Image (cartoon, rainbow, N blue to C red; front, side, top):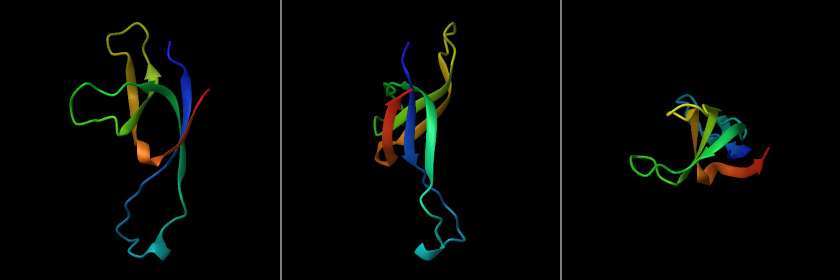
Length: 81
């Protein structure tokens, strides 16, 4: 089984009321824990993102669900749990 990892990453946000840099919140860091999924072989997703599944079904055709897709440019660290 793949190891569980903890990914620390910077969140991106959009708020139409924040029109100036002075209005922005301070940096928002997020920790996501789960299993890293491989890059999909096709489709709109690429390896430009880290795919982290929060739930795993070891005895099912659908092995993972609750997947968070984090652009690699926003990832600060990945460590094994």
